[in-house]
Length: 315
Ligand code: OGA
Ligand code: NI
Image 1 (cartoon, rainbow, N blue to C red):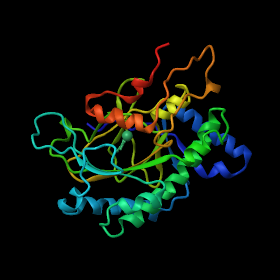
Image 2 (image 1 turned 180 degrees about the horizontal axis):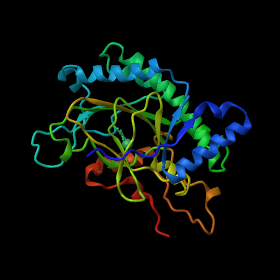
Image 3 (image 1 turned 90 degrees about the vertical axis):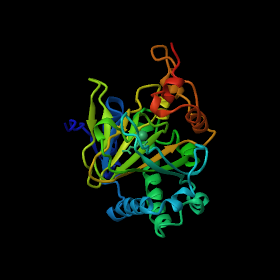
Image 4 (image 1 turned 180 degrees about the vertical axis):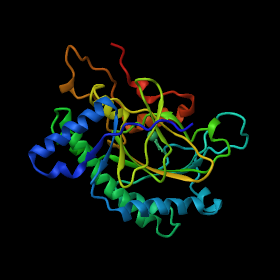
């Protein structure tokens, strides 16, 4: 049975730069989406279709390469800046996870791009363009988001400028038993925010009202934005990171590109003191991207342990 489609707020990003009145309306829409749902989609974001399509198609080509070529990047060490890994397993009698992933750092681009795959030959160029555009968008989005929290548009600008961008290139091959398997188990992202582009539907969002999973509908050229754990921390829980998962299908390979944006490796994300008062005591401990990696190296996502839970202060 096909799951119900999620209600997805669509934000016209171009309006952010169309004068004060338009901007403040869009900021309100973004704030509402972040506090009610933890996700939204943006249209009119300025990234042209050829860059989106180019990134998806070079990702498809990468996963079609012979396995020796991909194995060069294979590593179980979550601290590696470029890493290929696979969770495909043989037995098909229990719930399991079918995903192949290439993960690499993407900012500053000129620092990392030489470590990226050389094959397919257009990988660096196509993915590089896409990552650069995504990052610009993420910085503008973060400005809008801090503004929506009443902290002003510049609140995190310097720290985001020095921040990290990790590109997760996910590949979900056709699965013979999609009903008893998952592509990616339920999780929230550690990030401030994540921008997702998917080649076909498969991304699902947990509806916290009734506990059901809702499908994120096919997006033409819109991009899906997720509130991550570090934004939940910053906002003192006004914005909640969204729990999502990826499901599989029998027929065709699905690719998704998740662009993960956070502060620098050792920069601690703290709750904004402006959002703490007697009625709203500080609810979270500070943490960095490195703290998340250390958590990840000791915990398996599939076991359902979540990073954000380790940060919550019991008041
Ligand atoms: C992720 C993620 C969703 C997808 O990489 O964190 O949530 O559809 N991906 O692959
Ligand atoms: Ni995710």
